[in-house]
Length: 168
Image (cartoon, rainbow, N blue to C red; front, side, top):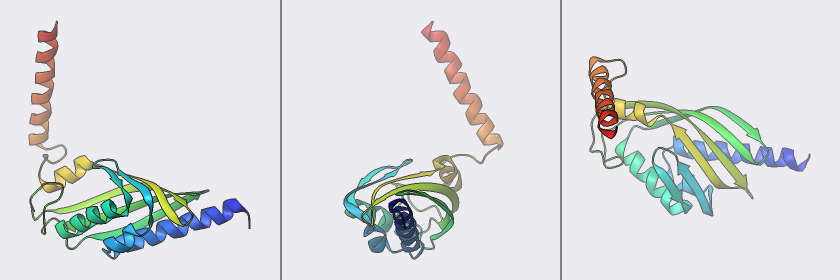
């Protein structure tokens, strides 16, 4: 087996194991997949540095969404990088999430993480998901294509036009 095949298998195994830990709502096991200096760049939220910050983030997430469910839809590997498409859902009925008090609303999101693995540990992970959809689900933004969304866009565009006129 070539080094590239071994690396690919290693990246796939580590990524699957990491996401299985998330599916079990086990922040300790999820954090254990990261190298001591590993980085988890959760694009809509920020950069988490090291296993302790990863663990704390998921402890807060699982507390906020006590019925959190996570499933992997596809894993694609190239060398030491695994891309993982996933879906997650849960009801915001526990603690705060990113400063937002529990809303009782159900959130369903899909996303993709790209994990770089070295020596059996994640050294860098970048996670992407649509934060606007999460905000809509939590009630922070109006529903897509609703009258409220159209009014919000009209007000925003009107403000932009006013700023453009005043700037001339």
